[in-house]
Length: 265
Length: 244
Image (cartoon, rainbow over the protein chains, first blue to last red):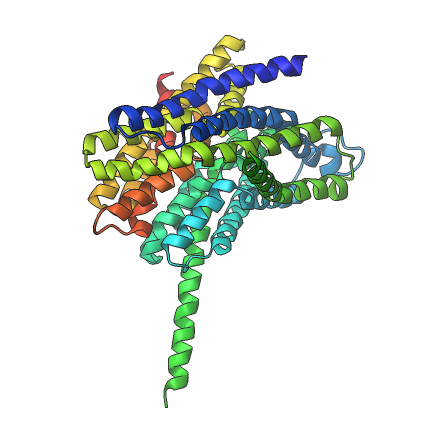
């Protein structure tokens, strides 16, 4: 019964949220551009799908993904797991005690990014627009590696308690240097992949991991340290995608040089 | 009707494939590393099925309703040739899609909960709701602004890096002034804004514009809107933290 009431509330919330989008698109189409809507029945059914889908998705997140992510972060950071059986509180630890946390962060970052539908959509578009030079899976894996490194480094930051902005600023310095060196055509796409990565699946799991970590490690506050992981997940794909383009360019160049060496007398 | 069901089953399978790596990672860590059974298995299974079906329905609905509407409009505006209408549309599109973003709703609620337990706001449902809604509106405003400027950039053909690097200099300056509590949330809100609803719509808008304007390259000029939409929320949320 409670679940039904909660689901009804979520549906109502969704109605409030989806109506503006539908209003914008239909309003501009009909009132301002004065063009009829093609297949109105199909559009209506689609909007109902969006509404129901969002409501189910959010309820499911609350039921499964959020608690599970938080639980696993807690279990992986529990004193008895970190320091061995019998330990109750974490008093003294080094960052190396948290190796499994970094591995988990990297694995979950990689897995959620490969699963991200928005990234798949952008990869397909980039593949079409680039005439095939950028491959769909090449871009997806480059982005996923960036997220994996970023989230792992982000958990390292929470464990060590070092300030967030130093990492972010250092990261952007690397981005600026790469921007001046990388092939020009990859730059907008690399920047975009920073925003694309952190979508419907990645955000809840990564945020739950960060918050769980901050709650269990002594001396960390959820407010100061728990957030910020997603910033890492947005920053590192820019670096990895530009690196992917730089490596491809370097390899093409090397192959060309080798070929011209061979053809030389 | 039959076609619809087949499409939905396909979309369900796609969603399952997309979620499979996550299931594998979680199962590996839970069973091999932590050596613990999955707790409340029933609830997690039910929630997982809801996420799966919800995501499939959502993606299906986007493709049936929002995509065709949105894509056609990018071209309609270029054909119409009215700059002010296009800018108005860009702003409202950014604002409208962001307000409805499930990831943003989730993170705004988490942020409000943390702010409440941290004593930044009163720990009552009303204050939490107001904080979460305020955060969502500020982020939506930022994305609307970003799309507006981003569309002007495509029309003018400015290189994307000047806008982005300039924006990040703004972020660094704001970080120095904003209250400590808001910084993490601000940085995260930048990544949160641009997810499954916004990204394909915005990418289609940018590429559509770059394709229909002479002298613009879809790869160089068409992309970049999403990046700018990830940047402005950081600045706007830090400003929200300074004045709220």
